Image (tube, rainbow, N blue to C red; front, side, top):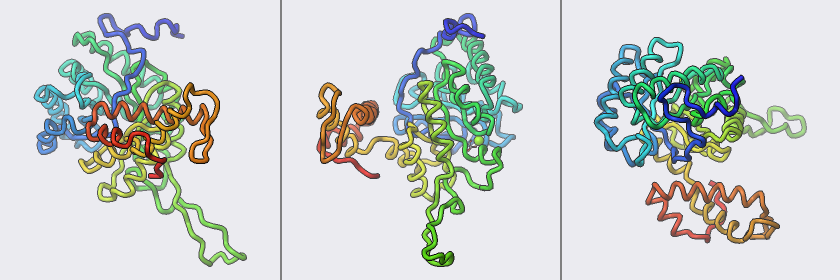
Length: 364
Ligand code: GLV
Ligand code: MG
């Protein structure tokens, strides 16, 4: 057993001290790019400032033959783009390394931390099964940070994409003070669970409920309602993250053309408590930025409740609805998020400023 007092001690001599709190940096869209793809790599410098997180992906979707080129490509891009990452600036730099049991995972971490560790904000680790995977990465990162002379710890983000990882989700979140958050990995998780889907995230028309028959007429008109395949998983992930003071994210939505269903899936995750999502195509960045920023009318309504509740105790009636301490706390979540986002997004700030406290709750 490790004493609670040692939890915040560096895990290697010379490594930076772990953070006591994970900073709430805007991360509405985590935009994935393949650093071995010259066309994608060339676009990266111009995206700084227009997306909250740029993530150099080394894992799935990068061909085995391109793994080394992707790793080196990310080093080159970080060096050539000085305003990307490094704990400051408008756009964070993350990477998704290869799995810990793959032929590349160890060298991904070793190379990236020693070459561009001062620029990396978060390392996303795929296929995390339990706390033991986080403990391994935690110690290795500390050793590499010491070697590289870093003064800021690199944070860790785990992808929830195995059944065992799901079962161990709480212990994964609490395994290290480096834990920044979790993302849902619906494609790998579906395969690992032996779900009978063939998609990368999103719903399935077969997963539905049907209205009861009228007068026993089972063949008569009986509307069906598609259900959310990911509700249980996202809700569990959100609770585990909230319990440990870290951040939950939806993951990939593979149907790039279906921007409507993508927006719905992202919004479900936002409403359930997620702070952001992955973007696999530039058009998903705009969707994520819209969905994961509170609607101006909701911010206006939340401000009105905060104002009306005064010292926060008791209850008031607003537009026929009872507001009390608990609805005030929900409104404060909204107002604080709006303030954080307004600080980095001038267009959003303008909308929030313009609406003031005059809106009523949106249903979007
Ligand atoms: C993401 O990595 C997924 O498997 O969905
Ligand atoms: Mg995966």
